[in-house]
Length: 64
Image 1 (cartoon, rainbow, N blue to C red):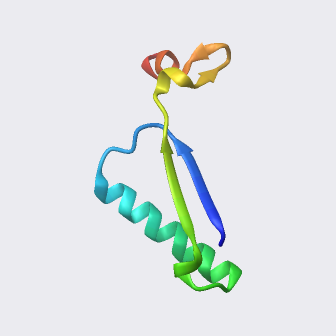
Image 2: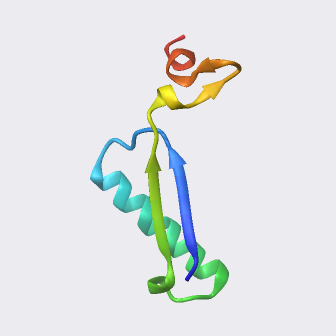
């Protein structure tokens, strides 16, 4: 089974998560020519303090 993993910051709504899972599955199914029910999608949400850019926490970078 193909496994799709997306790591991102906080995803705001359940509707956004549903659209993302649907869209990723649809495109991957079309590209790989496999049935959609064969795909597993994992959305991993990370706190912005757990990401670093240029030696700073992403939460601080985004506040600038």
